[in-house]
Length: 147
Image (tube, rainbow, N blue to C red):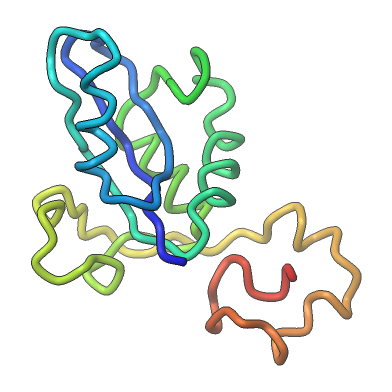
């Protein structure tokens, strides 16, 4: 099921970023967070539509461990968090990963894809689990061969 991995900020918490995932839209998630007590609204600064947001979020959190403040909050530049998400997803963000006409289009970075890194799970998997022929994911997908 498609989901989103996102970065949300709030001017009332300068320097902090929330990196999370949702099965709804990132805007809906930001709106839900608006009832959590901060006086200013939350803003979505980056979002990427993916097939398995929960897994990609966890890997992104591990990539950002040195910046972890608490729960899903990190103290790092937006570009660092975006790179962690893109790396976890196995590709850079370009137009092919955005829903056409989506409200997040202004946040699109347009950078080229970084080289895909092999995840620890892939590196440790027995060879038969890396057989891509029976994977439900398309070629190049970070979860291909992990099931």
